[in-house]
Length: 634
Image 1 (cartoon, rainbow, N blue to C red):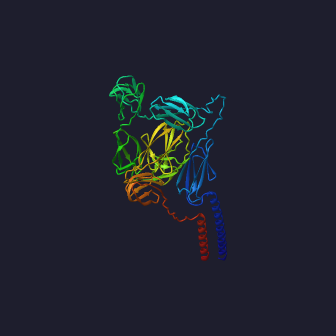
Image 2 (cartoon, rainbow, N blue to C red):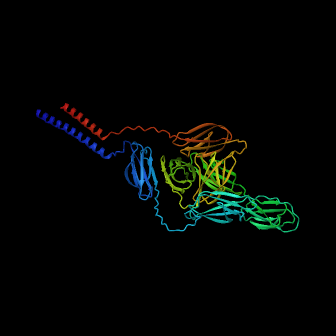
Image 3 (cartoon, rainbow, N blue to C red):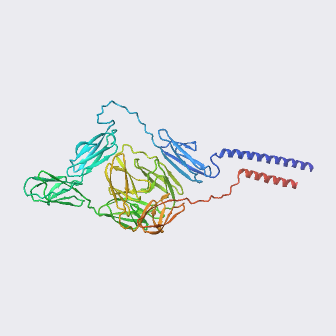
């Protein structure tokens, strides 16, 4: 019996050593496995991802200083690791693209990063050939000024030199002394003068047209009989029918001869379809051999039209030209000027709808907006190099870069950027539920331009801008409105704002150049009964309520706001609402820019799972306790 107990004691002792040996081996194994599996940058927590692509593909990705391969590539990071990451993408023949991302993706979240790489053009060294340069040209190629006038045959003085009669073309050196003064004069008309900055590009033709203003002449009555005098009749536009004392005499421009001593006094009429008829009585007769110059500036005779707006569901808020007029659908905008206009239809909880429509004389244009309900939403963060480009999401103006646009339905959206002097950029992106899609293109300057651009600012801001009767957008504080790709020539620019007189000017657009229009709006002088409020937010796309009445989404300009105490509420899913109560006076033009703050999300508390090391220790302890109990029984 004693021998048996001694043998059992030996067995128990060996089991102790075996358990201790297993414990040591288990700890060493866990240490090696942990060192092998956990990367340095993952400091606890789950994983999020950066999905990195480029255009063109095959760009080398450097993520936090480490080469991660070529695009497209997905990089995993710890959602609770060191926040903030630097990403650069390079490819032979293209400028290196880089960006910084703040924080980390959430566990399981994917942040999309797309780089539009900018090609580096290869410039061949120029080959110079000996040339003989005329003394009047100061180097460079040749450009041209095409100069005309209404009426024609006016004298052109170019930089102090007589160049002949209109129409004519003046040739200049593209690299000569920049800037030219052009003066056009004709007997019976006011002298017209303009200054042209810079020089035309090589081979470019800059069009200059002068509408000369007639100086009215009152002639004394003369006796009947004698030689002839003349009326030279022009019109703007030309090609209008001319009558003299009720008799058809042809179309403008035309010369009418009358007896200088005939029956004194004549009525000249000018008519053209689509324009109001023009007539003028001229007493007496032109003296023998002399000419009286007559110019008729015709006014369009179109009638205003209407825009009928319907939506599904109804009860949506429709805005014409970003706040000039508004209604609740279904409804009709009446007495709308002929030309292109923008209609925005919004309803809380639905994807906004925007469309450009043309209004014809005395016609009715119909707009039917099928609004899509937003069940899941995300956002797009849009930046650009250079910044300050106008952002359009599915044709809906959202402000200027750099900006975050929220409240977007999941799915595909078209992002368009417009900036004076640069090519219009447009690409489709996918918005994912609860995520932010990042867009950061490098804008490309316009090369070999055939069109020009316009930058419009106003004081106060919030004015609707029309070019040649077509709506272009609204001026905003701090940044000009970019109107791009206008044809070379003269364009009429009109700014409209409630409570102010319309501002009208002309802009002479030249290919490859940007013309700036700075408008100071004058109060209308009529007693104001309402106010206007220009509202923006960051992110944009937020719902706006004034005194609990829905008026659209940011950015917007609310016209005809009633004076008194008003509460403005701006709300966006995932952000704390912005509320401001203010006393509004009639005639005020107010601005509100709400910086929305994200709603703080409490960090989830989860019970840590039992580690492999803890499991081994627990098993060892259980084994020891079991053996001690077994030994005591023995």
